Length: 277
Image 1 (cartoon, rainbow, N blue to C red):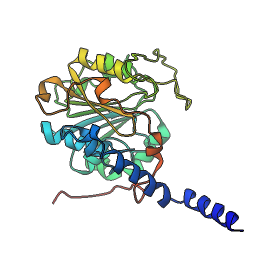
Image 2 (tube, helix red, strand yellow; image 1 turned 180 degrees about the vertical axis):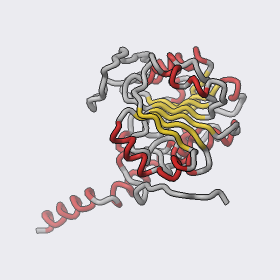
Image 3 (tube, rainbow, N blue to C red; image 1 turned 60 degrees about the vertical axis):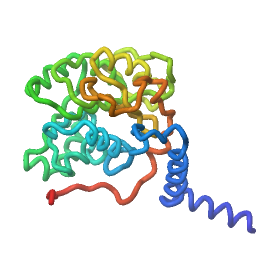
Image 4 (spheres, rainbow, N blue to C red; image 1 turned 120 degrees about the vertical axis):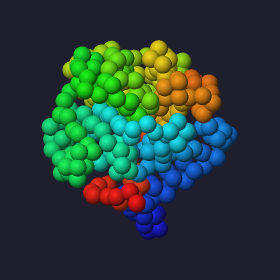
């Protein structure tokens, strides 16, 4: 009888929001106490979530604390319905920019979810498939602007889009990597214009390949987030001694902790009119 009751109780806790939140946040807290994260230049220790999928919001905020902000401009490619991405927190805090999203249905949801920002002109949404072949043409109108943040999450051809990008040189780049391919692997999925992620680990690029590409384009790899999803690059002319060296995949690689992405951190996301007081 006790065993059956215990099993039911465990099942109830596992299905609730609170149990996984308590467990994973405790795990996260304990992990960040490790020696690896004690250097004050290590960005992982600043991770936190407002509207990002994982802890990207806090890392992005700390990067700009260190290098400053020029004009509060962002461009993000792949934003789904607009309530969980790497630039929404910036938008809420007075930034402006452009979102590119391939799905017409998701763009319609953005029209509802973010109607305030669309109506006041701080957000522009473009329903467009992004590829190495059209990225520079689509960004021609911002070629002369200093873009503070460029984020790309298209589940596959991200490496090839960044490689092709010449229209702008953003100050900060956030891009997904495939944690399956650990350093020193330089593996990259071949470009496939018809690729659609099938939920497998055949996708994207290794962190080491991104490190090498970043170096070629004038960027240093300064961090990965704790869940092992996103890599953060800062333009070399802005780094100084502000970030943890060496700027290598071996130094900054975080393993896949994808369970971190599926735990709600509070109430569901919703945005509306706000002021900066």
